Image (tube, rainbow over all chains, first blue to last red; front, side, top):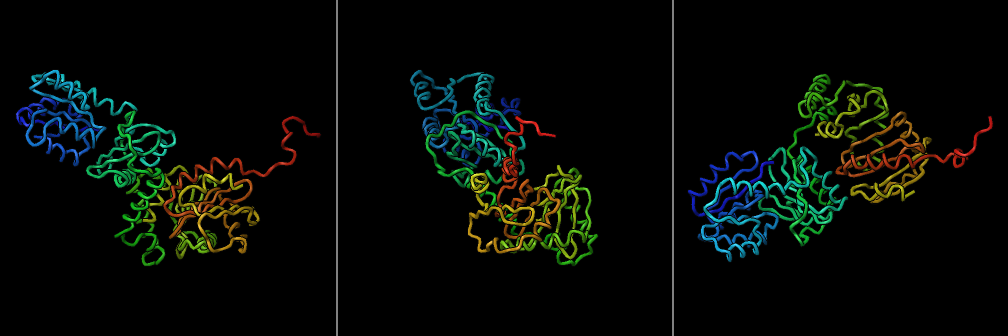
Length: 336
Length: 117
């Protein structure tokens, strides 16, 4: 996960020189530029920033004010001060204000880069994970009562977010300008993420006041609702209505599963079979008894070499699959 | 027996659990959400027969989901909302499955005494 470093200085030549100089570190971090403290605040709202490097003397909002704002609103973001008017008193003030580094101008660009890299390394000191489901992973964090800061990137939208855990409790979350429960729910709706774990949590107050599981479930519910809107008639509904030739529908369904999950989806065969009709009728009646509405599909494991997915219709459609197939994904694709 | 199913019943969205014998008798029932229908008044034999040979069944309906697991005692039927993480339910069932065994007479001392032939 490429990290963003925000460089703040009213000397634009200096900014661009730093940007050029940091190009050789582009696999470790990217730079975002701001010409004063106020513009830096805007940038903090729009981007997930991992580190701020700021000058002290600037118009509109100076480096000390920016430092104070970051410590109050983004306590997880470390700040390195660079200044051309360095005095021991200024350095002491900056350190007391929360700065993790202090460099007097002129300096070697490699020295600043080294300090940036050392500071950024702490972001992933607890490890990194790729392509994981955020919900399942975060429940483990809660179970293990961990205190940590987790930075995540959604694989599909490339949005970035951050979660703060204190002894397994979710204290806060942030995605761009959104914070708290809304940000947490947005993060929990991401299917696959890359994430890095930093030990420790800079936040002291719990701003969320909710257990993890209800938040995750609510996020899933909203996501399902969003996905359910504007969905055309599914292949399943077409099967039930019998408006198209079964062979064509079966072909469509097979193509749909293979396109969305890939050739390795474990799909073995697809056919219609009256053998299952009476069983499907019984299962359907059971759903009606509990007021669960129409029977849409069933997954059956009989311990055979294949498992079966049943889709009710004028004749039952049977999909045979490898027992190791991603069954939940397949069921989701079919019912879409 | 309720204690056995606590983890499943406390999962948000789970509406209830029923345990049927292989002959269709209701052995256990616990509803979390109010469900009007009384399962005691229904003949479950045809339903149980339709499950013959199935180890695990996951049924998706318009407004809910039914997960069925074959145990040594019979069929465990879990009623739930559509949003429930089914992987979690499966995992919980894997954990409690060994506990749902018919007690074997004399089994307690079986490992100490040899049987007369």
